[in-house]
Length: 326
Ligand code: AKB
Image (cartoon, rainbow, N blue to C red):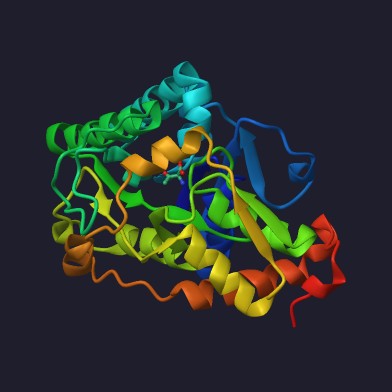
């Protein structure tokens, strides 16, 4: 039986990944973990452990207790929150990852850890951004992700650690909202459309960024983790693309369902971050090495998001009855 530890398991990616792992694989034991204590994890069949990934002793204890063989390391601080607390961002993203890789070396674990399009910067080609190119991030988050990629490469080359990674674009999902990212507008907009029929967007309408829908992101993680090690030619992190759209194009797509939905634009500090990121990513290497392909385009994402958020609208309250999706 496989024993999987997921760090940051109640975050945006973690909550979807854990659900999919439990659904798709019968012969596994998933140990969830995160910094916070959740009351719903007491007295239930699922295992949840409080874990701050900067605490290497606690990490080792959990690995030994559950005889973990694989880690999906999703705990991290995103770009916007990172700018508000650069020290925390470095500590969690770099020291946390180093602890995971050290544990992987000692206990011979397989590891997945996410990188980001934030490794790129203003000097990187903005369109068809290649797998290997200039990485000149201007955010502390981007700097931690470049460092993380180099650490992954080093641990793979020097110690033979089987670590695999993806450079995620913005991830859109309905289960758990993201927290503290620059691409969060592409999720917030759906909640605001349903609740208020209006959204004030923190980036300009022409801001075009690479994005992916959660089911595609989860499929990419699981596909990458299942492929034979010999097929993997990139140990730093694979470029991963699905679609790219501007904020205005997203608004127009939502307006196809809700013609009265309005959006105004008040760019804040996150605009400067978005301006340094690529608009369109070239992920040919991932497609070639392990057959990556995405399923959801913008229309499919908007339809699915509105459908699912309408179903759970009682949780966050749809204020405007005109904005009921059916
Ligand atoms: C963020 O906006 O910080 C993240 C990312 C692209 O890494 N979603």
